[in-house]
Length: 235
Image (cartoon, rainbow, N blue to C red; front, side, top):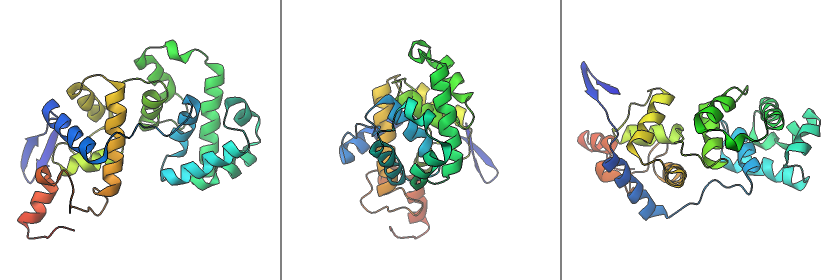
């Protein structure tokens, strides 16, 4: 992996020591999150589709609508008229598109029982074959619904580690996922907790416009150092 700085190319590598230090700092600040917020593996999968391009608070409203109808199960979603399903998940945004994606997932699950016996690579490949399920959504499902040690790369992860100077912001998803997984021990509990802590921290401090005051990672943040070097005070 490489980072361009002017005409100079600088290699960027994720190290176990750096990643675990950041993990411990985040854990010390925010404590364990025990993510994903879902009562069943199926609810986790539904949430993974609905959270595409929207805030989780909107997803919760959509899920509550389905729970209110006692419809948060495979059979109910498959028999519900698509227009009715779209109306229930409307709070999650892009509801017509997400209705199609959700039904694609449901049909896949109905037609492919026993997925839990597949190895992770085969299961991931099958999830990615579903129209509307991309790498991030597939990895959410693998990690949180199937308890597989797959590190989820989302926009928060790219923003945080890009600002820390540890990754290239626009590097490929698969390359970045592989680098995180290679640097950390293969542990689904660690991966899920790390991902949750990144999300919480990104919402609290590493926002689009960062809030650097009292940030637990400010001392090693390359972005913050550059700001100070340019005479820009903390937000």
